[in-house]
Length: 120
Image (cartoon, rainbow, N blue to C red; front, top):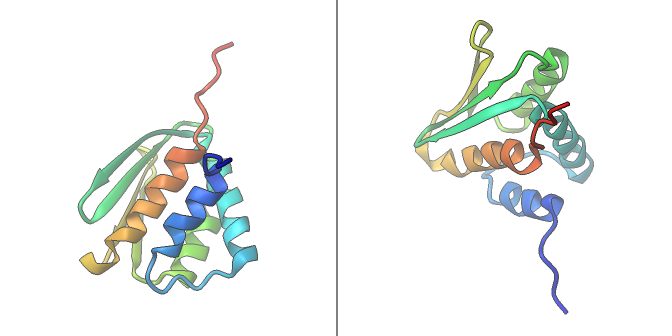
């Protein structure tokens, strides 16, 4: 009997397609946890051909965001990141279109782990 892939399995499949990702298994697990934490404050993800725009609400954990971006810069130096403080928008882009699959992994990490905000 086959089962549907878990979010973790699907994330690993997407990450496997990234050229030159230098994270080991432990690093991928820790980065996935940071993305999951950040995703709880994501309000919208917009995909573009050479960039992904991620919008955050006021609950954004900026320390976790800085840590996640620092890791990404080390393991995948082809990324560029720009955070607009006023709009709480992160722009993740690639320097070469050949690295565009990596943008899919970034978008997927936020989309797949994002939980709908609870209304109480």
